[in-house]
Image 1 (spheres, helix red, strand yellow):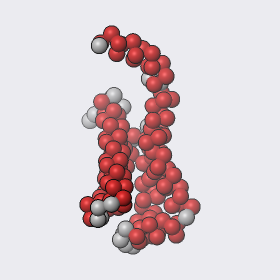
Image 2: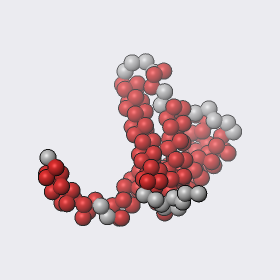
Image 3: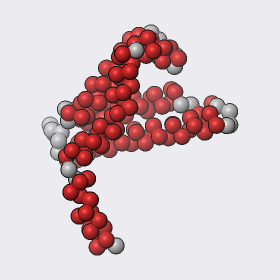
Length: 146
């Protein structure tokens, strides 16, 4: 089995082991947050409506904080500037938002509950992805130890 794995790795590493592929992975992980932040920024009334829908008050300051968090933390990850901090911030935000917005256990059995449960666990996967980004930043020596 080791021989097969070695051959497969040597075949895919020239593409998947490149810095630009890592950037594409980071971009994919941050895409929803970039899109969400830009949508909220260009439709601030819609962002306020979203905050109100989830019971966050005062809605306008919460909307601004979410816009700033989604855009700045995503850019930190993409630029590699305190990448670990941006990843942990988006991971924590995603975890909190998931428990706020996707309480599938409160829904009656049926399609809506099924869809909310799927989305809930997909968001937990995003949290895991952000934890992995932070972990990689720490283990690859990109962060200074004091």
